[in-house]
Each structure stands twice: as C-alpha cells, then as structure tokens.
Amino acid sequence: MRICEKNRNFAKKLKKRMKTVFTSLTIALLLSATILTSCKGRATDGRNTTTVHVGEIEIVVRIATDELLEQYVSYVEFFDENTSQRQWLIFTTNVAVREFRYISLELVYDDDSEQFFIRENSVMYELDILLPHRPFIVNWMERGTFPHAGASFLDENNIRRYFFIGANNADPEEDPRGPILFIERPPISSKN
Image 1 (cartoon, helix red, strand yellow):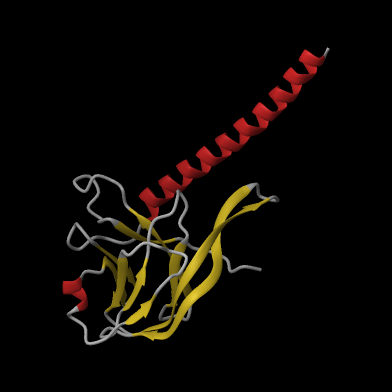
Image 2: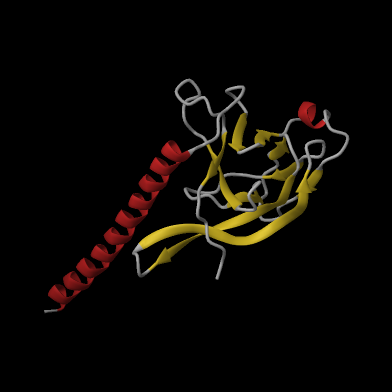
C-alpha cells in the first residue's frame, strides 16, 4: 500500500516538474524565434556594432573599447552594481534623444492569457537628453536566457520606444549583426 502511494506522489511531482521544464523550453524557443525575426537593428561593421533606426533617430550600441572612448571629450557613465562584468557598452546617437532610460526588465506570467511577457521593472538610469557628442556607457553582461536590461526613449512623435539588450551567440558568418543585439520589443508595459 505504501509503495503505491509513494509511486503516485512521485508521479505527481514528476508530472509537475516536466510541465515546468516544458514551459521553460517553450519560452526559450519563443524568445529565440523573436530575437531572430524581430531585430530591426543592423551591424555596420559586422563585429561589434548594432545600429537601430527609429525615424530620424539612429542609436548605435557597441562594445566600448579604449580607442572608441578616446574619441569623446566626455560621456555619461553608469555602473550597474548588479553586474559584476567589466564589459562596457556605449550608446551613441546621431541626434538628441529625449528621455533616454537604461532599464531593468522582468519576465512575468499573465494568468488570464497564459503567456509570459517581458516588461520594464525599473529605471536604473535616466538622461533628459542623450546627445551625439556625449554618449552613455554602462557595464553589462548576459545573464541567462531572458534579457534583464534594455533601454527606452521618446521618438519624434512622443512615443516611448522600448528595446532589450541581448548577446548574439550566432556564428558571425551566418549572422552579421555583431555580438550585441539591441532589439525593439513593443509593447513592454511598465510595472503596475
């Protein structure tokens, strides 16, 4: 009698774990498909640059090197204390960009729609204006499957545009976007 009861409990636990694993794998596959199909950026040098065009605004995200930083008299620097990585990203623009925000993201599950969403969790750093001659740099590292950081800004029509930052682990010969992806993912709702 006890053996049958233990087997039933084990079967229930196994079923629950399998459902969790299946859900996690499904989310990872959907996110991967989204990254591959929705990227609006393009790499300009095929190695370390992703450029996003939103109307007249052009935002370039690169891995910050000493040579690149030496091109600027000054820049705005934010050190994310939650990231131990010393890899720095630099955000540059061709025109003044209003209300540029570096944001943390979170993955949430909506019981009603039975879907996962990525949304803004908090604003980690905000600039009233990101200027072409004064870029924004931040330390960053990839953490797990889901993006944990991104950026948002107001476009020419006063619409907030949201992007997440991710690592591109694809073969550079097959995917020329470079090692950093900067992908628009509307809508990312703010935390309620």
